[in-house]
Length: 162
Image (cartoon, rainbow, N blue to C red; front, side, top):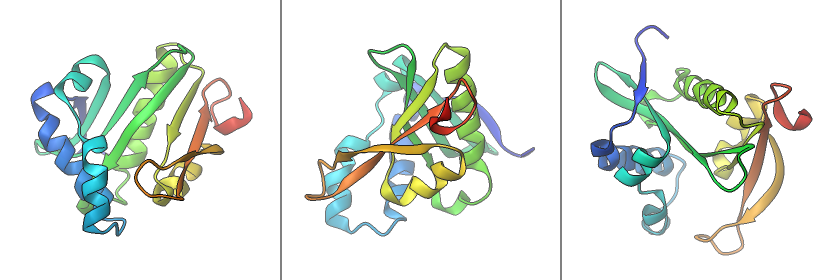
């Protein structure tokens, strides 16, 4: 994708990346009340950008999407905290480009798998990339709903087969 540039996020971009997440999440048809409930958990902070690997995809200096990888207790697991693409830029390969960058980052830093809890509307996207559903996590926002826990094995290069 020659017109897309990937670069590390800057801490001062946290508010713009938060707005991007909210636009992307709302594009799945969530109502205003649900979006208000989601908003605090979806906020990107400058501290998170400084502490973790956050990569922005941009065109002509305008952020179109970003990926955020975090390491927790187990050094073998990289957590994909965020991968969002602005609704006007979806279905152009930007999400796949960010996924591949996150995959490469995780692998080169010693992870053997990527895990993520996916929005149910994004599960198919991650499955097309080779991730597999390995469980479910109760939603803290929508009573009675779960979100898929997904895994992508890095040793074998795809899904749960690693």
